[in-house]
Amino acid sequence: MTLGELLAAARGRIDRLDARLLLEYATGCTHADLLARPETPVIGPAAMQFEDWVARRADGEPLAYLVGEAEFRGRVFQVLPDVLIPRPETEVLIELALAKLQGMPAPRVVDLGTGSGIVAISLALECPSATLTAVDLEKGAISVARNNAGRLGASVRFVESDWYLALAGEQFDVIVSNPPYIAAGDPHLAGDGLPFEPQRALTDGGDGLDCIRAIVAGAPAHLAPGGWLLFEHGYDQGEASRNLLTAAGFKAAFTHPDLAGTDRVSGGYL
Image 1 (cartoon, rainbow, N blue to C red):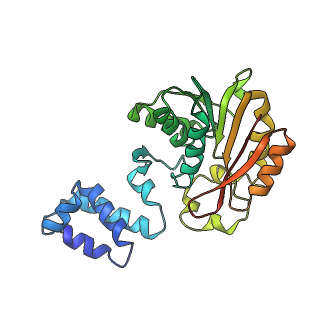
Image 2: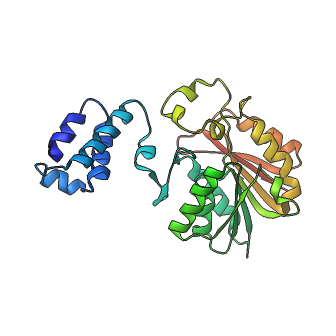
Image 3: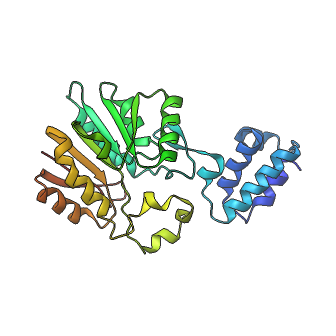
């Protein structure tokens, strides 16, 4: 079959843009090739790979898992089923952290639940004066994040740990986290490709606040004076997050929206 024939065969089964991207990944062609030379023959293995991907995409498997990578803040990160797929909402967390890091001469930052490493790596590359530590409980996630740091040239220390457990005696100027915050039984878990993503990274199995409670409760022992805690959360968790921060002694507890105007990140300082 040709490039054009394969693309036409995918129409009606999956989104047109998804089909084009999958064909480019499977064959190594460019968008310009598809437009200028749709009659180009596609060898058997590449055609079979494309057809397999189309079938899996039609079943709801996320495109990022099919091709093994996703773009975030202009960088390409490896993405495997061990980690969540990067989402643009998380840029809010990074932008707020960068704002807090301004003016700090040599800030120490820890990213709890790093997953693919997008937060820690972005901060390391965009604030070179910072020393970054990235923590995750899952070996698979640490492996993906470490690989991403190597590919992108980011200096990050990776620690396999359950939140603060392996950080005894360490203090940081900024703690950031994008923890599991979807409540068990939330209907969102059944849609938009989420069944394919690691459930432990999406939900705490409870009310969606268990991990946030643990992060807030443990932060005072690991924050330097004046240090900030910033974490991502669900659209309806802003008030609860601020209450947890205030109860733990944090000052100026706030919630910041994402670009859609939805409560997305809360934080405070000690």
